[in-house]
Image (cartoon, rainbow over all chains, first blue to last red; front, side, top):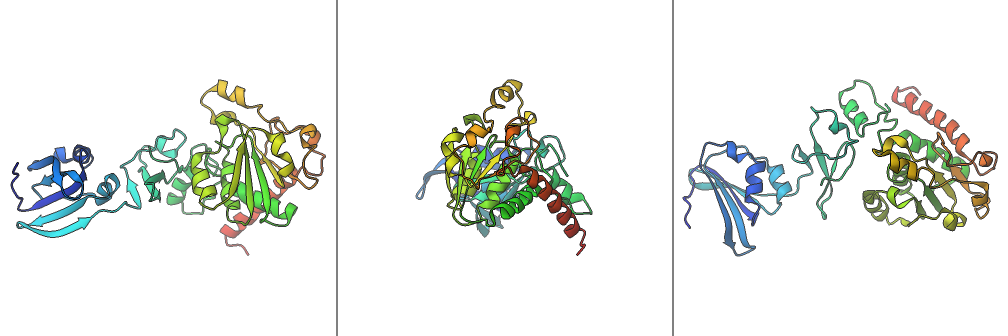
Length: 138
Length: 205
């Protein structure tokens, strides 16, 4: 299968196979007018298979979200047909409004304007806790 | 600030122009009570190291328990005995992030009498109605542990019995005159600690 190379845009590569649609939704890519290609189950030397998303325009991507969803992802910024930057993701220290606190006793359950902020407390086990009530993300 | 919602003092501290003291937020934390508890332990036992501390009652929602366990995990040779009904066990994140992370020896049991002889400190808590969404669960669990003179027969002579108060019925009033009952001294220590904290935050020497 051939998908055209992009001139100015972003390639999100090495997505764990099957997770591209999750990222598409979290990054609100459905709101874009440009071409967005989602490639599923692409053969990969490292991972066997992987997903790739190609976005045919330069947009601000929330790297914290990408790192949280899948820290193995790489992001290439393409300008004038060339890779200008290649970024490797890591687990972010905090994520804002990506996870929602489910604890009914948490202040975020009643104060609607509050951001839902989660902090990484255990990188090995990928555990994030609400900064307000310390409940673990679910 | 005392607040039923967890994290409310943190939210307030981000907006307020004066220092905010968390005086208890939901079932989360209760740091001024912990300072009170530490002062009581120091006054009664003269040390923070080499202690076996039993926590009894509602360990799930008991915010004073969570805060004190975290504070005591800084000291050496601390053993923690967790005594509660199965439904009110200490949250696993505290076991993992505090006890295991600091190599604190701990056991969990439902039987207070069995562990009584080992304890240097017995920290009693009440089962609080407001922590339950279901009245039936509250009624079923509220009388799980009631400390009586009979249960203290095997306890150490220098056991220190603590309770953040108010008490409902989990400590029999027959124990109030026992020299091991420290909870009224603990209340007085609470007054001193809060006075000291307010003075410190106001910058009064």
